[in-house]
Length: 339
Image (cartoon, rainbow, N blue to C red; front, side, top):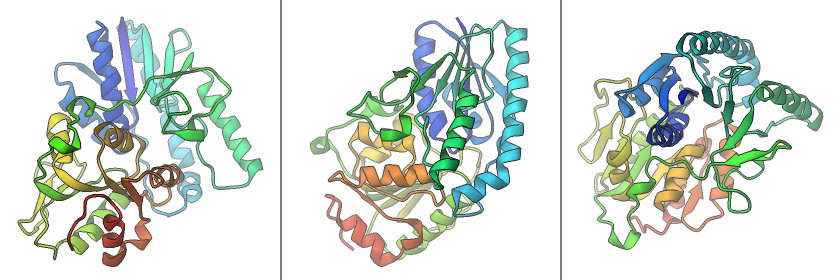
């Protein structure tokens, strides 16, 4: 079956989890064309170098404010225009290339009325930090954009053992696809691991908040020369590493697959965002982590709070990120780091 698989470019999480389903489809004999833009498209081209690709219009979302409402309000017109543009691109591509089905990871314009179109998302009911009245108006609009899709796929286990919680609740029928982690096959039991690093940093997500977190963490960890630290910046488009750091901090612009899993399995504690795909990776590998939600992303705050209830996870907000708070949060993990 000729399948068009469309992936949202919002950090690397969507590209990472979609890779699992793309690989499944390829294994089942589907002829898959992969569509995305920006760093997600770059990542997917490296992951599937022998496949066909389609570049979609960019949403180009940036987090200039710490308020999700302000960010979305000022960029709503741009996002809606991108949805219209991607629908036009996808419709024309399906006609010209005899596409038989579409899978869309959170791209609302990637459907065709005459084809099976599957919408993949864990956010069927996002957290809207406003009154119940306006939240219901938002959900009604969201349902309008999901209505053309013939089915809803959720990258999660079915309740009650699910990660997404009430984010994935919806009145429509849903198909649960389980945890979609490209790293799950590389799990090593904790008692068999050999730790090369004390702390790992995995940074991804939209700018400028990604860079702000990177700069703050480096300034705190730079003097700790007795700790071995690795930093994965989530920048697959970067050819060279411009950071000038001491030798105890090992920097990689981008890693994926076995290379990334090896680093994660080799660190005592991880610091990362609480993006959904990142958390699926950590749960599949059983990695101890301090999670720092992206400012303005209510979903990441919710997920971080859920994860902090587990014994091997802690949570810290970016505005509270100081040496004292960071070391206290890391000390609450089982790793027993020495500061």
